[in-house]
Length: 401
Image (cartoon, rainbow, N blue to C red; front, side, top):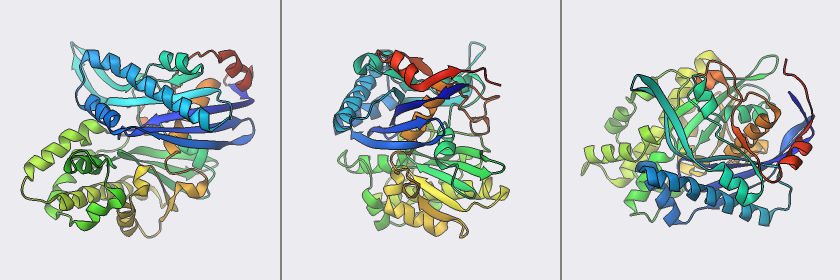
C-alpha cells in the first residue's frame, strides 16, 4: 500500500435529479484527518436539466455516444467555474458522471448473465479539457466481483463520520435515499448500507410535471404541507417488494422514476389532487426510511443519531415528518454539525474513492454492495499533470500485506 504525502482531490457528482454538479475539494494527508477545503455547486439551466431527464428515459445508440461528450463538457465547465473561484491546487478529479441506467439485477442474454450501471462520462475528454488526471468508472469492478455497484459512498462515510462517538446512521436523501450504518468495535466499521427507496425523485418529478416544467422541486415541501396523505394509496405504494427485500440492495430511476409516477397518476386520475398526491409521495419517502431503520438496523442494536445530508435535508416538511416518526432514542442531526455540508457529502465520498484508487486501497464494502470480496474501484485516466500527481501523492510503494 502507498504511503501518502498530500493530495487535493476534487470529487464531482451529478445525482439522479440531473439538476447540476456538486464539487468538493478534499485534502488527504498522511497522519491527518481528511479536510474539506471548499465545495461548490453548478446548477444546470432548465434546458440542460430537461435534456438529461430525456436521456434517462429514452436514449438511442447515437444519443448515448453524444451524451458522454455532453456530460463531460458540463463537468469540464464546472471545473473551470470552480477554479475561477478558488486558487487551491487540484491534483486529481474523481468524477462520477451522470447515471443514465442502473440495472444491478441480472438478466440472460444468449446464455450470458448480464447486468450493468451506465454513467455518461468520457474521462479522456475531461482530462484533455482540464489538464487533470481523472479517476472514474467506480462501479464496474464491484459488479464484476458480484456486487451491485452501489452504494459506494459508505467508504467515504467511514472516512468522514467514523470518528463520531457512538453508533450512527448516515442518511443521504438525494433522488434515491440511502443509509450507512456505522458501529464501533475496536474501530469503526460499516455494518450495513443500502438504498431505502425513493428520496426526492418522485416528489421532484411530480412538482416538475404539475407545474409544466416551471418547478424542479417542491420548495420547503410547501405543496405537500398543503395536502393530505391518502392512506389507501400510501399503503399500496409501501407494498412494493423492494421495501421488504433484504439488504444488500440498491435501486434507482428504473424503479422509482418517471414511469412509476405515470403509473400512479394514471391509476389515480381524477381521484386525488396534486397537493394530496405530493403529501402521499412525501410520506412514502419518510415511511420507507423509517421502515428500513426498524426492519434492518434497529433489530441489531440502537443507534445514537441519524445524520442527514443531501438535497432532501433542505425540505422542511420532509424533515418535520421524519423527526416525528423516527424512534425517540435516535437524535436527528444534519451533517453540517460534523463539518460536512449537506450538499457536499456525496462529492466528498467520491473524492475519498479517488484517493483510495491512487493508494491502491480496495474501497467497496461487500456487506453493502453484495460483492464477493473487496476490490479496487475506479480507473485512472492520466492528464497532463500525471507526473506531479504521483510526486505529490506517493512517496514509496510497499507490498500490501
